[in-house]
Amino acid sequence: RSLFIYITSVCCSLPDLFSYSPAAGDGSGIEFSTASEGRITGIRVWEYNNYWGGYISGFQLRYESNWTAEVGVNSGNPMEMILYDKEAIIQISGKYYSGYIYELVFVTNQGRLFKVGQSNGASFNFYPIQKGNELRFLSGRQNGSGITSIGAHWSGITYFKLNQA
Ligand SMILES: *[C@@H]1O[C@H](CO)[C@@H](O)[C@H](O)[C@H]1NC(C)=O
Ligand SMILES: *[C@@H]1O[C@H](CO)[C@@H](O)[C@H](O)[C@H]1NC(C)=O
Image (cartoon, rainbow, N blue to C red; front, side):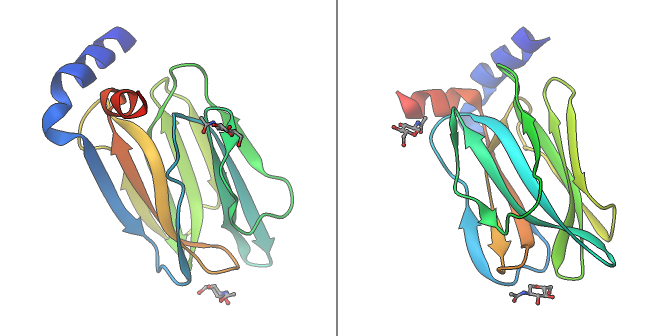
């Protein structure tokens, strides 16, 4: 099955190298982007707990062996998922409510699921237009208290291999 996906992404990625899942959430505060070199190999997310529940306060991604700068606020114990070799994020869903992102669910091409936060508010569901593409980076806004919006940028494995050469 993974061989099939690889061939698909090589043969068909030229007309549609990128896609963008427009940001969900109210989006107060300042912009962030995690765009970096290499493949995404891990995700770390912080959740802020208060009396009415928790929202996503901060996160960082790992590219190859390097973690990006922390986005938002990072306190308490992070939840973390490290990807396997050739594992990639192919879908992100979640919920936002009352100014913050409350839930993030990352799905990989190996069928693993990494879920953080509270199932609270309006839903969003992000995935690449092109089958076989994977998450390249996240962008959105954070306001110094938490993540207020999030969007996803996808591309094929062919593109970023060429791009890194
Ligand atoms: C990781 O960070 C090191 C040290 O800053 C840097 O030399 C290296 O190029 C980075 N690797 C990638 C894949 O960005
Ligand atoms: C960030 O946004 C939330 C939700 O709108 C708000 O309650 C909070 O006060 C804001 N924080 C800052 C530092 O502006």
